[in-house]
Image (tube, rainbow, N blue to C red; front, top):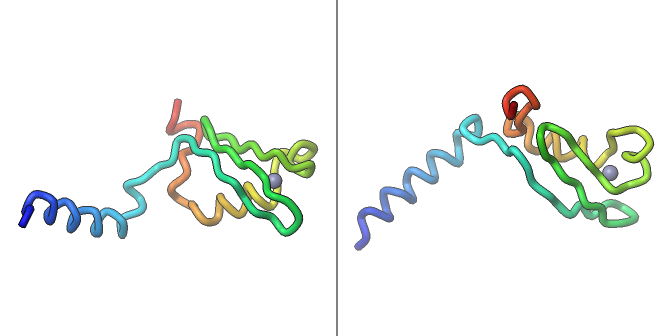
Length: 81
Ligand SMILES: [Zn+2]
């Protein structure tokens, strides 16, 4: 038995319930939309999506969906600065 690892697994289970501990600062995701797949990136508190709607509006269903999923786990620009 690796008691050190068992302790870490228990801690990981507890951490996984405490989402407020985690702030994503950057990531890239593939988003399978209804028509096409899109690449959505988050960096420096800003969203970027390669869909046409985002290019003209600066926001889109893909970025807003990820914002809802990750909710309080997204860093704001002030937190990163
Ligand atoms: Zn998009």
